[in-house]
Amino acid sequence: MGDLVTRDVVDGRWAEPEGEAAEVVGEDMWALPGLVDAHAHLAAERLDYEPGDLEGALRRARESLQAGVTLILDKGWRDTTTIEVARLLDPGERPDIEAAGRIIASKGGYYPGFALEVGPDELGREVEAQASVGLGWVKLIGDWPRKGIGPVANFDESQLRLAVEVAESAGSRVAIHTMAR
Image 1 (cartoon, one colour):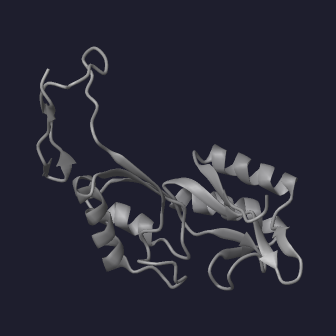
Image 2: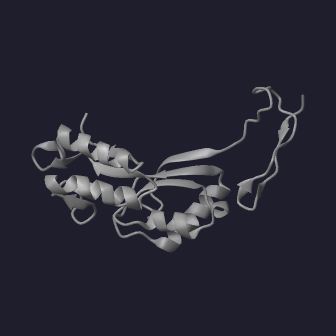
Image 3: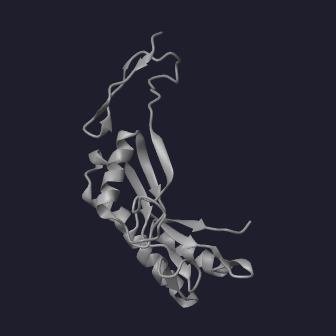
């Protein structure tokens, strides 16, 4: 059999392959390139914790598709820049995007001013709000280092259970940032 021959990206999507595969993958199946960026932050060029740069995020999404990324998993930022990218760009101009809205932490449980800081009685309501904004994900900061003590849990087990139940009932999943073992 000959080598698998593919055409370049056409209208933002991979073109149908041509030629014969060197190895058989399965009956009536093709193996196609497609990368998943499983830890993206489209909102910023680097982790500077500033508000998102929409124009830069739009460019980064287009560049990702051109590089062969077909799915981006972006688990949130201090704002909803990535959600805006998914809404503003035609699906043919960007990879598929699954994303969290704003990141949620307990009061004092992350970089000051970056995450939505909630008290225990506000967690369920905020998870529900972020699930409605996000694209399939809610992001919690599970723990964060405190000066002189190291990582401290931001939420107890019952709060985490509530967050997962609320997110799941809204059709979302929960990602957790953690520093501890």
